[in-house]
Length: 389
Image (cartoon, rainbow, N blue to C red; front, side, top):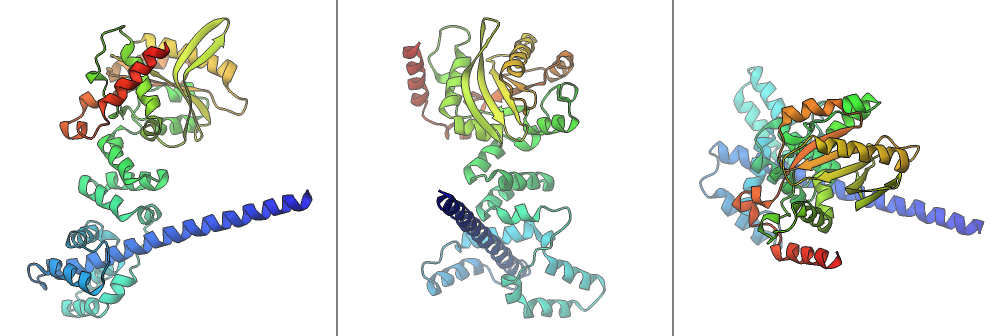
């Protein structure tokens, strides 16, 4: 048995080494690709913007590359122009360019500077060294793919906002589609702005700050198209439809909610003092090390929602929370709220809570609505729910 255990340890160690090596290799390939594209973009920029090449040069170069390197992918004229944009938008990272500027500022002959660039242009392409600026997330920058960079540059102009999405893509391993959803949801302007009482209700100040950063004040649930369903029953049916649609798309919802969330279940039953209560959605957050209760409301925020959530959190802390866990947090998701009013009334509650709004397909632009799932899927989901009940 001891030898078998030793073999298990060996397999685990070797497997870890293999996976780490594969990860490092993939990361290294991505870094080299980005540096190559950045260098090619610079080379194209220096020649095309300064008039050294004639009109149509990029198209001609792309065609010639295709002839001389059959099967070469990623170097269409369109992508070559993307590479030029990639360089020009992140020109401040080019240590060679910075060196050339220093030379120019010291009044050295400009012709000499140009000759140095011409002499070393191949080295610039293949050996680009992006400076590790103390305040620039270079690891995240080199971690994400070129397509991610293209999407960010195409939609975001603000420097700090670009850095936000670059770091988020790297930290949460976003696919391109996940990045587009985050951009559509305008996460940059909704992060850390949730009306809450965390500072007052959570015992540790650092925990309160982490909680504030973990939630947004608005969530885009664009896969929910409840307004097109033929529903004329009880007043709270929309909440159940939203809940069911979230369960049906739980992966998307967790992605919308943010990293480190694990879904426990919907309609989570609380049994205390002979009173049955049900939480719409219950999660656990690894970073915050606490349960997170989510209540869905179809209309505008009401103060009664806070009282209801306070009761849920009291029972969660008293009957469900493990000794090593932090106090549970409650999030109320409603369609609308008066932010100033919520900020004022929520401070009188002792349990940590926040209030956010959500948007469904009805609130989206026509362009976004065309990308939504088929409404028939949600209709079948609602029919199934009716049959079960």
